[in-house]
Image 1 (cartoon, rainbow, N blue to C red):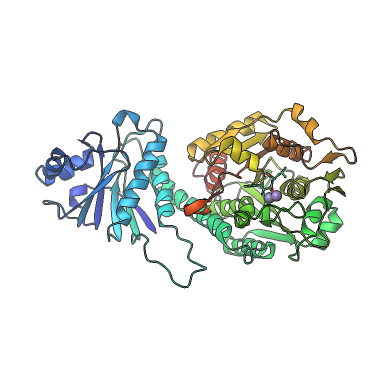
Image 2 (image 1 turned 180 degrees about the vertical axis):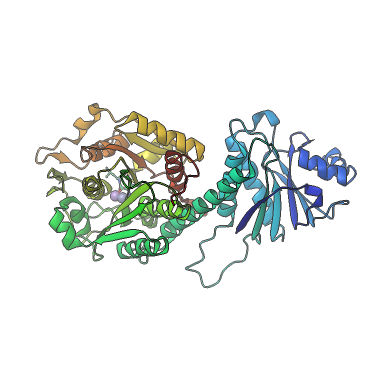
Length: 503
Ligand code: BES
Ligand code: MN
Ligand code: ZN
């Protein structure tokens, strides 16, 4: 999809479709009013007949509206003016794109950037619109030979520049460019998540990282199993040993910031398929465990996005990646392994494999002398029970970092919620035979998983995002969401003080 920003009066635009908002129970926004005036009360007439009530996200398409230059006019309901918050604005925009998809319009101009949303400027509205437009148009057809042409025909979207004079068009333009980069990062993360697990293997993820590095001139290194053996990554290799696919440890480095500035390190869980290993998972819905590499995918998507926007910041992505399979050589419950940090782990459940690959990656991250480290992982089913599919779980050893991430999550409308990481929970990881066990019982499963990780983050500020409930959708709409690419990119953008490009 192509996006642009333009100033102009709605009634004068030669567009396949003009989109304007109407409040409940039938109050016209200024652009809708302008159309109505040009059409000599045509819209008021329709509202008067009760054909459209302005409920948030509802739409009505009108053809050949007199006095205007467009083929169609799409009315979009905005709900009650006093209630318009982030969520409703997003519902409205989604509704607008669903309405547009049902028409044959290949291009459209939206007049929805001046709608008042509390605490949100035009840049935010533009950014949300671009990302939701791309989401509406996303299809994963790569593995189909017959493609159903049910999707939207929309190819070109023009956003009306905010007419409020305190918002410069340049700032709006830059918000649009950044949002487009983010939406491409989201698409990349979705594609990798949705790919079949026989295709998206650890080697495939490594190849993707190399491609991103080539496209954006970044540094990439891929450690092979023998390299990891030399580094003493006994925990990661314990997960890999049941699989025929060789494990990899990918580092993708983006140095867009000042030379001396320490990098932000993002660590993404890259289990390309999680059978549970010898602690085998039940058969039902096991296919969804192809999504167990969505943390890794979000790291690649985020780095691709910030590289495209040439953000002035240093970021290193580290991706430990392997399958978790049962096999003749697979790890057994009761096995004790030594991690790269030197600490020993009793593997009581081979299905708690994410923390095993992450703990060695977190120890490896130390070599970059990071400013902060954030790991992103589909780590626990318990997180889905706690927070459902709305918020990602956030745990951190640093209050300031946690606040920064929560702020970014609100700004990006990619919600996260903090859970405690108190020492009281650490006791659940006691083992009679090693320094720790890899599971802490059923109670507080998300927290004890983070407690386990915290033991490998000795020297740096660290946060953990559990995206088990947010990285993909199940059921009829099954598919990756691309989350938390919006949160992570926003976090990095805020850190660089918006719009700052490196030379
Ligand atoms: N990848 C899963 C977590 C998961 C499960 C994500 C369901 C999304 C939906 C992880 O590797 C896992 O299996 N975790 C176990 C941990 C347990 C054995 C302590 C879990 O959550 O059941
Ligand atoms: Mn597992
Ligand atoms: Zn897993």
